[in-house]
Image (tube, rainbow, N blue to C red; front, side):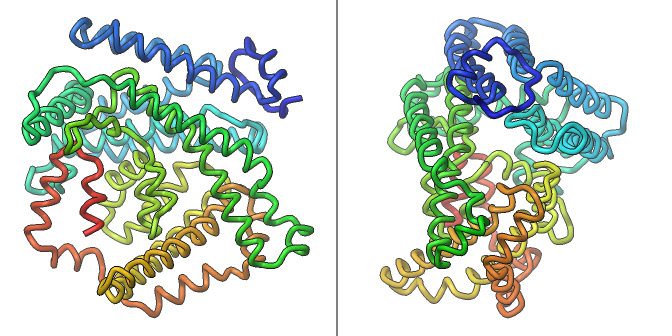
Length: 478
């Protein structure tokens, strides 16, 4: 029998759930995603902007989305409306000067309230898929809009950072239009002009990219179901496993387990990306060879994740849209210790399981240590290709070990199992990172900004005005 979990959504697919031995809420979610994929092609063909008004497109998308939410989560989907309604009320009835702060507190507070009741009031860990997941995305969208309206209406242009200036909106009614239509048209025309490609009013066909992403989904799901089922992360704290295997085998097992766990997220995010592309969303201009790119709203870059040579590179390519949100609403605006504040906000946003906080607190220390090593060591390995290769191999291995060590509490969730894991590793990475931070000097962010040459600032401005989301990655590589 399938794992017993509470499902408040439709029970129409209960027979399928029993046949394939999967929880009903997971079955509902996957079926809705596949239905959304088919509907997306219909939406693109029959409700194309050249044929239908934006109002009709918005109404259809809203009704379809809410129906799928009801199918998956039942009456819990009403929380989506309550959260959005509260935020809209704050935007309407509070002054623009502090509207973004109130909206942030109300939206994130309501999300946290739902997460607390789901975990501690009803049943700890009872859901395998739950209604707070979509609320996390809604929180990002609402708070981003609130900050962008505040930037557009209350701040002078010269006081805005380049990214804030690019995203700032000047009126509530224009916000959605500006973020979806104008930026898209600007991106299309700007890149087409650079590549001498005639600007067009519609995106090029996306079928090939959708098929490639669906193939990635199939491969990711297969890897997860086959390998992770055989190598679950929970085994790293099993007394028998730890007693019967030397430490290096435990390290190798942990790496394989985490390597097999990540495809679960690859599957979900890539499928969502494919659905958006099928509906005509996510076009990001053209490559230098003239081929279209469909990665404007992609949430990960798999190869950059698996071959990351720094902790920052891993984070920059994992859950990309959330990383952008954290940077825009927290890191760029926090006057004191923005790194710690950003990790703390990420922990609060993810939920109330203690393992989340252990992971993100560890992430603060690892990030500071990685930054110190890079600033003090990297330049000594740039003299030749051989030294650079040695540096890349060492940093790749170190990054993978740091990621595995950091993420284990995120998987185990509870305090007891997480501390048991840390003690089995003698908290070695915690101690090493603290030692590196204390020994190796690193310049503050404010000092680096003051020393930043105007040419780099101009490059950042050009990067932000470009639709190429990989631009930041190119700059970091230089």
